[in-house]
Image (cartoon, rainbow, N blue to C red; front, side, top):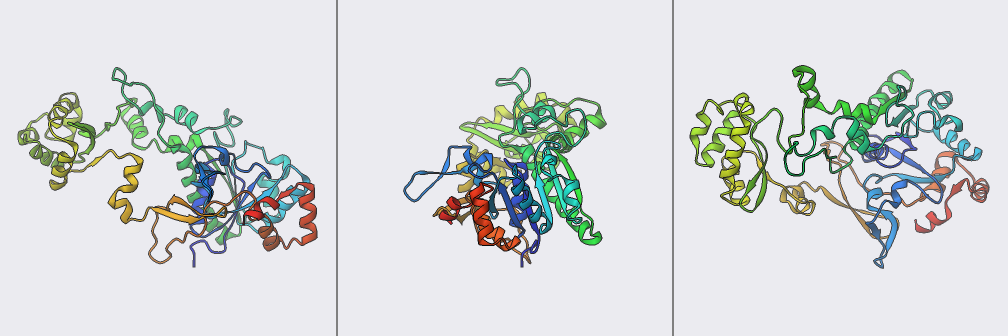
Amino acid sequence: MKLLDGVRVLDLSRILAGPWATQVLADFGADVIKVERPGAGDDTRSWGPPYLQDADGNDSSESAYYLCANRGKRSVAIDFTTGEGQALLRELVVHCDVLVENYKVGGLKKYGLDFASLQAINPKLVYCSITGYGQDGPYAQRAGYDAAIQAIGGLMSVTGEPDGAPGAGPQKVGVAATDLMTGMYAATAILAALRHAERTGVGQQIDLALLDTQVAWLANQASNYLIGGVVPTRQGTAHPNIVPYQVMPAADGYFMLAVGNDGQFARLCEVIGEPALARDPRYASNNARVANRELLVPHLQQVLRTRSAAEWLAALEQAVVPANPVNRIDQVFADPQVQARGLRIELPHAGGGSVAMVRNPLKFSATPLRYEQAAPVLGQHTSEVLVEVLAVDGERLRVLRELGVVGVAAAEAKS
């Protein structure tokens, strides 16, 4: 038994936010049918290098980027710019519970694939629309890209070194964090809307914008402004509300120090051999440390430069003071805790061999997630889905192939 057994998702999304959401649903056991353009597919298939290598060590057409967001899905290659392709998708919608798309506002209406048109043939359909700026407002017709949304949505204004420091200036986060968070909001919204549809028999459209997501997950930084009236600024790795809570220098590199309360600060002072600091009125409480960070942090940095990061980390762990190394990605996957949690998995790929991936972080006690297949090759399941879901016969399939409405032959050869 899988969590979402019996739920079928028609995935018309590309790039990252939509595919990330539908990958979560696939991990949960939904049948996710990914609709791609014949001959081209999802844009990210070509976003490389690196590419998955075949048995002979040659690059395949599957980029690492595409593979990270599309496991567990079935790929059908359908050209829905044609009337026949549109008819196929409408037939599929009748048999689906969810549709996910990330076209520009109104972009699918000319194909008869907008929410109003599809709800008329499937009243229970949950229709999730992901755009850059939402279905309304002065920016609704703009294209949305993660880095641009990080900029306009305030994230870059609080990311990077402060003005006057070496390397100062706004920075984007090192992964497409706004896309990924939008994907997670989409997955949770879809599950909530499915619950409503089960109870009432009525589906609905979910209007989800990258900008809305970015503003929503400004979290404490937004709250600091809305309640405190002070505009947050870039502070490097430092925290606006907690001190000391930032990357610290050691004799041979850096480590992250994350002191979250006064007790931890007192133990830090013991470790560095300066217990009196914890009793100093300037530093005795977090409020005082925040007010006097310009005095405290340089002093701590001077002391911490006297020993190696490994020495400090060992001593801080013994004292139960939160601190961690600043790992490179290769060090992350070599970390014993990451290995113990089984975060790296290997999945079989239709092109031969296997793909190394990161598992879904969720663990369920009664219904553990099962990972069966890496991301599909383009059009891998076209015939399978059309026969299984729509009972398309061989003659109709042949005609659709000849018309170029579906792409199956090359993909089937790899299956």
